[in-house]
Amino acid sequence: MELDVNELFFWDPIALEGSALAINRVVLLMFIAALACMTFFVIGARRSALVPKGIQNLVEMAYLFVRNNIAIDVIGPEGIKYANYLAALFFFIFFSNLLEIVPGINFPVTSRMALPAMLALITYFVFIIVGISKHGFSYFKDIAFPPGVPTWVYFLLTPIEIFSTFIVRPFTLAVRLFANMVAGHVLLTIFFLFTHDFLVHNIGPMSPFGLVTLLVASALILFELLVISLQAYIFTMLTASYIGEAIAGHGEHEEEEHSTAEPVTETEGLATASASH
Amino acid sequence: MVNELITFAQEGGGGMTDVGLAAIGAGLVYGLGAIGPGIGIGLVFGSAIEAMARQPETAGQTRATMFIGFALIEALALIGFVLSFIVLGAGG
Image (cartoon, rainbow over all chains, first blue to last red; front, side, top):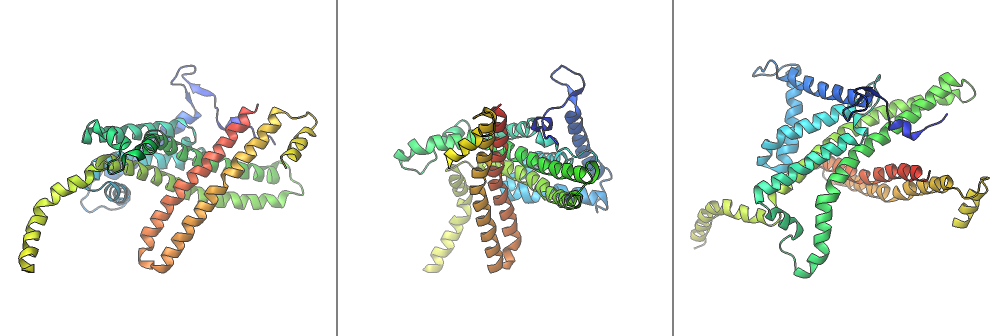
């Protein structure tokens, strides 16, 4: 029983062969994932009753989970503007990953590096452009030279900060999603291959172990469901965290808080001053 | 120990081949690369369990943070897993 790892990573084209837009089985599955995502939201938004019932309730709960627990909790009150992008990201990654445990398909589309790399690249541009639009080009200066640090530390801190923010972030964002899905898919493949071999292909003294591997494969499917949801949540939450950090900046956040808090503290200061006399 | 590994690879019948060394390298990459994340995840979950035992009211928030920490550390172990396949393939 040969396991050629390359067979996990290369497929033959179905249509439009030879061009850059060649459609093979993987691209077809990406279309299906996107279609499932769109259908999910369109069905939820169709009737728009004020008191939601049934499928609308489910879709609203799902969208509000992303909006409240990820966008507003992590970014702050300004997060509502980014809730749409984060919801699209979360549900597209979730439905693409979900194809891994759908019985006939069993292939997570995000295990092809192109998809996580593209999503990480889009997030990379989103948080850089948000940073530039909020702070101008001093955004780069604030990241490379964080304020409030003695000058000699900059020789050590600046390369680390630049490398960590502009190179490591998109790379680990993409590789985390990609590697989790590849590892899960390889595990499931190995256990189902062993089951097929022991129970169907080579019925022999090893056959009872086929039942064991079948049980383990079923348990792994449930574990993969956890990993799928967790990876979608982590990707979206890290995107929100990077956007929030780009909005806040490094030292400027405290200055902004001072300027908006001034009117309140002045009157309180006068009240406490007169009370202490 | 390394000498024993090298002679073991040589006794395979073909001498020290690129494929044999690549296989050893791939095994080392993931094996050594899973030590750190294993300890790290143990620390994260241990601290989370202790926190949830000391203060059950914050169990929900603790659990959410625990999953975030787990995913970030797991990424390192999985980068090692993918890299071991790359090393295996690069050995020819």
